[in-house]
Image 1: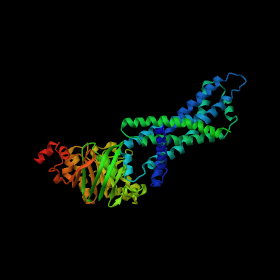
Image 2: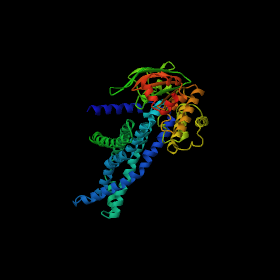
Image 3: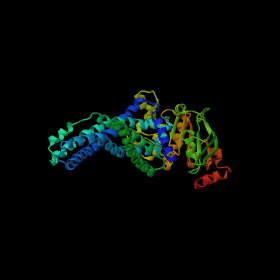
Length: 248
Length: 248
């Protein structure tokens, strides 16, 4: 318990250092653009592929699970759309990015720590936490919502593709379902979630990388912890945000 | 001038630096010698503020560095140049960008002037035509020299070198030693070199302190070191056959 409290305190102190005044704004801007490339643009491929398959599987599963003739088949489109928007595009993408981006951040910072590159920054008088982590946070909270929007569209398209290819349902019914009972707030809700998930993935992973001491073994352990704990935080905050935003 | 006064550092109640005091003059190459694990690296990191002492303080030209807050230290740290044991070059930057890094962060020179200064520093350490390469593409000796070039880029008043020639062949080690000596005298820098290499001590040491198990056992010049009656020092230096022959 004391160890958990110590880690939470250390994490909060790291956040304080990250959000202190940057040395040179211009250099941070350059860093942020590079991080957008690494964290955001390089993740477009994996998010696209996963979303297509998620959308396809959701559409097929719903179609086979609707056995009652009183339930209209166009609800497959509605269910796919709402599943993608409410849960899969933000939470699943968040979890996938916790694996891809989180492990990358933890191993990058961990390696910089054990090879004294972070010490080199500090010895020059640079706030290493802010210089190394702030651009990643900005990149993630800016790009995670964009990836979520991409995932929504691609996932819904994946459902349509599955319906068309497998011919389990007339495509018109699927599209009719997509137009049925759309709640715009669901998009806002999922974007808020993706914003928070982006912040959590970067800061939790950065915490484990930044405070990694030792050698290659410890860098590997930091990377694993980063993925595990950022995934847990995503699941925890998914419940909290859902309770806060969707419960009336 | 650098003064350390009664520095004590413990890790988990184990005393690693035990009440060490010394004064190092400017324009001199000051050497800290001792066995591996004697506390040399902890001591040098304590001097530059990467490790906080449990008691005692460090003065840089009568300015109490230990008592300063983060922002005050930041200004003094811009007068530091530090060469880490492994070089600690930034993997993601080219050789030229590594040397440009402190200039970009802290100088108000134009882009052209910064590049000229970085090239001057690289030439000073006898490096030519490698500025486009990454640290992983150059040899260990070159990496150390790039680290020295980066350390002197901002015309430091204080230069700290942590085992600058460890892992290098004897020829390159001598080249690095001469380079440190030359830079120190030319720019009137207060230089501190951590080493356990007796060739460095006899080659470039103006003032030498010997630490053993965290305590300062001896202090003097290279002319005095071979005639010391300190048992621990003699055990250390005369473990080398070459030094025994020199004494004879």
